Image 1 (tube, one colour):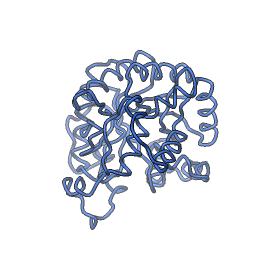
Image 2: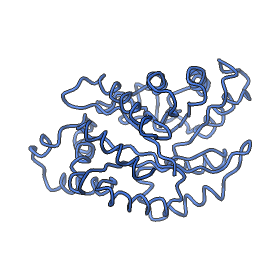
Image 3: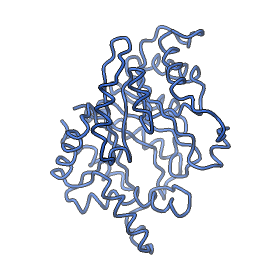
Image 4: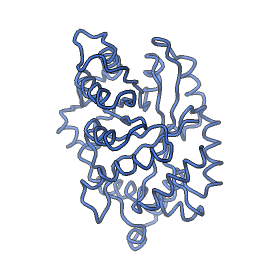
Length: 322
């Protein structure tokens, strides 16, 4: 089972927003030392809780600080970019860090209406995601009408973040799929992912590859792990009321705030969705997930305010999957 790490460059109270980028680089260095397969970074726009809006820029820094681990995007949101420009960016990365660069692409169009307007994404614009992915791959394979430079830098593998009908897009194009979030809780997820394998149309000898992305946190006890998960879940709960997905707060500060019954219920549901617990608890939940989905790779993405506890959790997860 391959094990990779996604770091979303979450901001934290008590730290400047820009510090989150340095935290991502530091986490990637530790992931390489621990033996993770690859480390991915995110793309979010206009979100106070996320500092990374330009994956290619951040990956250049991650690649410079590491030497072996594969680096990639989880992912570049194609509705915001021209496929040719993305091909150029990732060919540049591949030239700087040969044989280490992956490109995950998604279709999110922005967290709020003002962000979508800033990105020039109107509701009337057609969904061209499948066509854009195919065009991007053509540019990376020198099959397009224009050559993305620098040429001759080796392949840049493309994966599809398979929200919505993305699973079908990945299968039709013969590409790896990355599945996470609410999709994993759907009762028919096993059949849906089996259909990906059945419907897979190989491209240049490609084979189906399914990566499951989920939040994972390990501590000495189940209760301690749920406390680690609280800052991320609390940020999501608060965003439901305020419309703002904010920085991670310390657990003690969250516990000091007043919650109503709706907040408490949402917190419990959110915490239950995180794979958080002792080593034994997490091992059992991951084994069940792999059996249910047929995953080839796990992409873990836990986050919390306490960076030392997060580093310990990353090490514990690697030990479990080793």
